[in-house]
Structure formats: structure tokens, C-alpha cells
Length: 212
Image: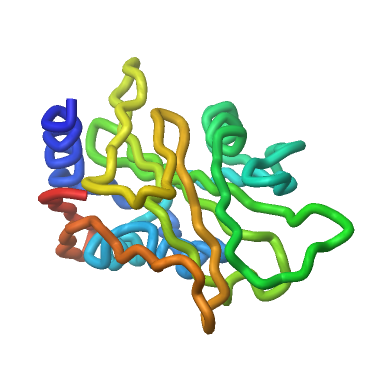
């Protein structure tokens, strides 16, 4: 299965991204740059900075223990086709809060994002999460982002990370995010694990991937 997923990633991400009009990348998605910085590999991160986002869906929920409750879609695109997927990811998300924020009267709110990219004859989905607090973009987020590819009329094929930290939980619709204060991290701030390269052209972005 691991070899199959690696082959799927290599096949799809080595194909060409279809240009979107107007182009929209991570710079237009609030909190995306900061959250994904340590959740994907450095080369793949640089590719995302210039790759057009086809769809952006957001779910908000309240953090109770390590999971979200009361999750609901607060931003939907692509006619709601991916709302059930991001709601399922939000339901299964594991949040490891290592910040020093004092216990509040109300639960902290968390935003779960799903970004959709068109890649030749398939779609790539990337999900990540961050706190919905003032100054949340200044926090340190780590843990492998959830990624999957889908061909027309086929189920999603999850792209599994090459390795995980012991604290991370992973499944077909489950992933973890660790949140730490930037000046005094309690966790180890797991470095990115992907290795992806992109060469831009005037009309499109080309991806090649060796592993994740």
C-alpha cells in the first residue's frame, strides 16, 4: 500500500497544474502560509505559494480536550461538493495544544481548512488547522497536513507521510496538529518531511515529487 501511495503521489504531482483564472494562492488564504510552514516539506511549501487554489472550504469548531465539537462549515466553495469531507476531517482532527494560554471560560475555536487543487486529470486536497484567536498566526504549528488525490468517479487516495512522531494520530480521515508558543516550544517542532520540487512557467506550475 505504501508503494502504491508513493506511486500515486509521483504520478499526479509530476503532472501539470491547470492554471486558474483569476489565480489565487496561499497568500489569499488567511493563516495558510503560517500554518503550513511546518506541516509540509520545504520544497512543496514553496510550490504551494505559487500554485493556484481551485477551492477553499473552512470549518469552525470548539476545542474540547483534544477534539472539536460543534463543527460547522463557515466558508464553502465548489457548490459544497467538499463540505462533507472537511466536516469529517474536522470531526476526527486531534489538536495537541502546547501553548501557555490560561484556561478560558469558553473553549478555544479552531479553523479546519481544505484546499482543492486541479492537477491534470485529478484533484489534490490538502487539509490543515489553526486556532481562531487573536495572534493565532504567530503560533507554531506542526504535524503532517492531510493530503489525498482523487480521479474522476474514484474514491480519495490518501497520501501518507513518510514518518510520524509518536504523538501523531493518523488515519484515512484523521490527522493531528500540534500548537506551540513560538518563543518557548514544548513539543519538538517536527521538521517538514516532504521533498517536492516545482518549476513555474508563464501559464502553469509543474510539480515533481520524490517522497513526502
